[in-house]
Image (cartoon, rainbow, N blue to C red; front, side, top):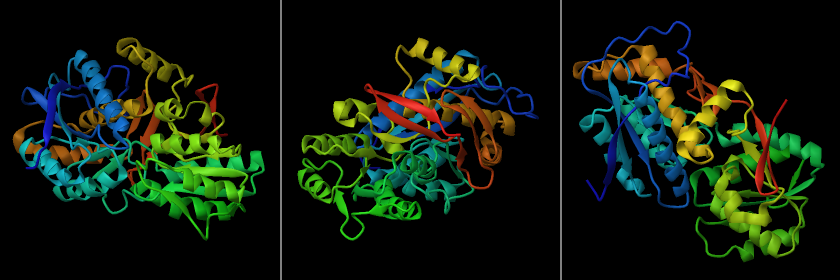
Length: 395
């Protein structure tokens, strides 16, 4: 196997007491063995590395909290974690290692949609449940069912109703799009989502015949923004990773453009705010995580998490934390035995339990569609106000 470093495995997991079992879930009897293993694949490198940092942190916190509750059926769970260091070529070996050598019951991850396009088919072939927490490309699960799932909503599905509302509220008639042509989900959004959506909403895409693009990590986007300025649109749609989109926003304001900034769910997060500073003030996107959700049960989970972690819960941290809750709850519902001889049966039980599961977690209350493996969450609009995200539920 190529230069793959295993991040220290960590004893983790059980079912958090605050998460109620689904109606009809059977009581969990004591499991076989001394630990239940779940695989985790993230990377802290590359333009999406911040997602991996938050992801590893999220599963670690969930592991600590859940183990403190005593384990699943009296047995603690071990997270077997790998960092592929942004190297997609390492992913096939990592998935096979987790499935055939580490013998995990399920996998959480990876970081990006491009990586998921490698991980999901292999997991599906090996019949290991795989739950993505930050992979938002539309249609990603279609060819990888029934073993692929995610608790993050596809960017296109999540963004469309928010954009429709903004276009109406702001009376937007013309838009220019600038997108990362190198990144899988960004290219998809820039070519297959935004243009047809804008056309459907009656908005003129000024970049339709001459797309404005950049590549992840480009040191300068001056030329691209100069083209945008010449078009003089009502609004600019920026598509890419949080760091890259913030760089574009800064250049837009530096060149004196005052147009409304729009984006898909990838913008929503602390990195866009920190990297963009005053340049991203007023930017609007869709959100899937509402840290200030007033729902009492969710509020209690968030406050408990932040008290023990010492910092505000971040989006991808929350999704990773909740992924652990989702997998362990599926273990309970499915009634896994954790016997080595039942490994394939236990994986199938988890897969079946994930279809239609309901979860109460830090990221709110959500379910997974039994047919598609996609998450069902409320639609939310997020606007940068005074350097923070202001979130509003769509009616």
